[in-house]
Length: 184
Image (cartoon, rainbow, N blue to C red):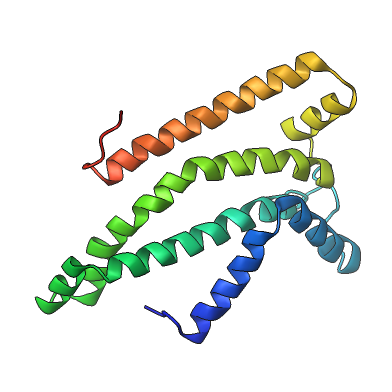
């Protein structure tokens, strides 16, 4: 809809920058700006409002990547013949956009949901340590430092199982959104 306009270019530049930065760099920058310089958020996760910055630092990459993926998928779908046919038949633009285009454009985004959850889980390990949030990630990093092999193995198995389950849910949702797909 806004292809190659100024807002599109600004969004693409910002999302490209956010995709290029890992969550621990974003977390460090957010901590520096909003806790040290501005001082509007607490520096650790135990105080009220202390989870806002960790949530933002973990969600910026997936939101940026999903924005880029949705944009490219929508541009691809909007150039298809069936979209031109629907427009030529006089179908309302909103119906073309939401019923015909978005339904087919959401498939790659659903496919990305599994790896996105894996990114958030693995990124939380470091972000929890940066913001001193008591959680599984902080305990996992502490167990690595203390060489607690039982905790390391248990956490690794738990996180691996969680990631496998999320990938399976992603594949099932992929089948729901596109019935033509056969799960093997």
